[in-house]
Image 1 (cartoon, rainbow, N blue to C red):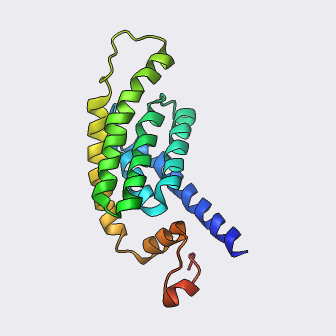
Image 2: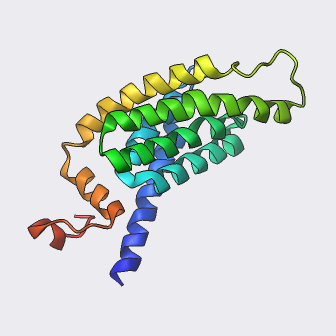
Image 3: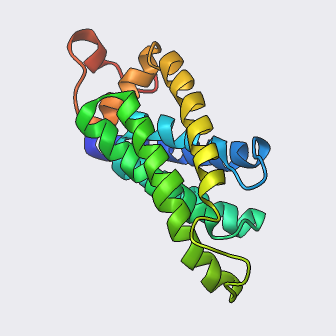
Length: 184
């Protein structure tokens, strides 16, 4: 039964991160930029890893599209950044690599893929070119990554944050900590 409990805990934490992202992203939005999405991507991938971080970004993008009427830019802007940030952090354990992954994934890859998606979505390529979204996506990704870095530095000092990280890595905490449930 411990495995079912672990899966449930992971889903609960993922749900909380999705809820935070969906609520905070429109509150701290600059037209054409979503820096809070990058903040949540950085914190999400450092907490949950690349798989759950990417699932979080995908789910948040879909929810923002369905509930808030945001165009498909919500997906192209967040998913690639979360994936590259997660892979970068998983293999380097370095927040700077995660930030670089977020900036390249969102600022470059996401912005370039947004052009064909928006041409398809709007049905017109008039007044659009490949780099139309790049400045705003880079601006949002850079500012969001910096804020995410500051948030991560504060969260890293919290024992509960470290315990949740070990839950997503599938590791046991050493000594007394491993005997305590995560919800204590």
